[in-house]
Image (cartoon, rainbow, N blue to C red; front, side, top):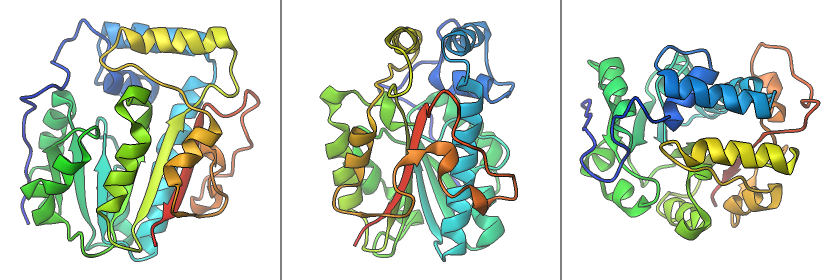
Amino acid sequence: MRTTVTARQGSGPAFDTGTANAARIYDCLLGGKDHFPADREAAARLVEALPGTVQACRDNREFLQRVVRHLAKAGFRQFLDIGTGLPTMGSVHEVAQQAEPGARVAYVDYDPIVLAHAQALLAGTPSVIAVEGDLRDPGAIIASPDVQGHLDFTEPVAVLLVAVLHFVTDDEQPHAIVKALMGAMAPGSHLALTHVTADHVTPQAAATAQAVYGTASAPVTARTRDEVTRFFDGMTLLPPGVTGVSQWRPWITPAPARRQPPHGAYIYAGTAMKH
């Protein structure tokens, strides 16, 4: 196994500190340090419109850690994390390898900022790779020599699409993308995803959030619970199904379970098994 990191040469966002970047906005909301004034301004506008945004982002990150821990303890040794975002403490490979030391992780992202950070993080970590790839082209991800050399697609894979599908527009057919991606996976593979929703916010707040990302590196499309549930068509949802991100098996981690936010969920989460 080897660590592979490539710089984005295609249609991914250019490195532009003057334009808000989706990954850096998220990092800012999580209390990270890898962001610039444009990202902080965008994050502040989101928090003003949606006061629960910071907690929702933290809940989303905690879900990722919970579901990876759950799957690793269940015996999963292969993780494909698409749209990984900027690496932080408690990243997928760290959590997975705590529970399953032999776990292999392939991070895939199209953002050169993310890949540059991954290069620094993963140097000398042969069980983990970070490669260029765009969720909107699932066939290219599956066919990637680096990914194929790192993961065995004849065995179950845990596919992670955490806070990424809402950056795929309806015109880009996100449900067909997920179907194609999971179609390449072996029976027993699992899909875990989270997705922003406007089900519980005012039209004005939703419009503000869309406007913030509309001038950032990637626009956002909020989807309803039914639309999010459709991503799991043909698979068996694990209990409790598609729910607010903080409500998906909160007992997996030592932290006390959170109640449903008073404003309603900003992010839905779910996990399902392919037969």
